[in-house]
Length: 406
Image: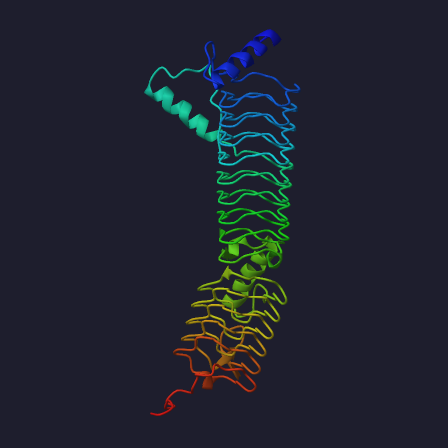
């Protein structure tokens, strides 16, 4: 395509945008325009499939509703550009500058360009071509992109790669970020209200002042993320063991070996002072582990075997410990306020040697100095544990104790 041909296409596109005679929608699919200076260009709703705009100056350009499927926009200057409603599936935006750009309603899901040249003459060939296309699917890549104060509301960024991206102050409210890679991204002061971040990777992301109200964060990888500095009202945060760091996962695997072999193999898990808020441990056997001073707010330990676990000084606010076996566990000065402590097994447990035989020694559950204010205790017999100095719910009574007025 010659420069004159390019200019003619742009002129006719302007006429087409305004529904004037002689207008024609611009079709620049697969064209190579890398490095051109095109500030303020109006390519609204243009066909730009597979176009190479690598390093182009597109500041304040209008690319709204354009078909940019699998386009190359690496290192492009898109400051204050309008990409609202554009099809950005499979687009490459690594290192692009999208500061104050408008990406409202864009589609950034996985996509792959099917190059022409191998037409499917029959059904079998068509199926084979489709399979090759699926195998070549790649997520939109915005790694290291500058998106400070950008507007990306109601956008579909399912699986998008935003590693190290600068999203400080960006508005991503209502967007779908399921499975997105935001490792090391700067989300400070960003608006992520009502976003879906389930399955996303946020390791080491900065969230100081971020608005995560109403966000869905199920299975989100949050290693190294300081959520206490973000606004989480009405957010649903649920992490699983497989979302934890590899070191912690290895520690838990080694602990299982230690438990199963009565200490002959593996190693006791020492997880003191760490933050595992919102993690689901349901049904696991963590007997004998040490979690002294560990933050376990809203953790799910329901149905767990927690014999002789050391929870001293741990923060278990609003944790779910229902039906857990806490025989012989230490919960001295633990904060269990608002926790579900119903149908918990307390009392003494036998100490066993490496062969599994009883040594004759016992350990009793110890809740001395623990805070159980507001905890649910239905079906739990606290008399089986040491409760000296514990703060118990006002309405709690030992079993078989008549209520007032009975």
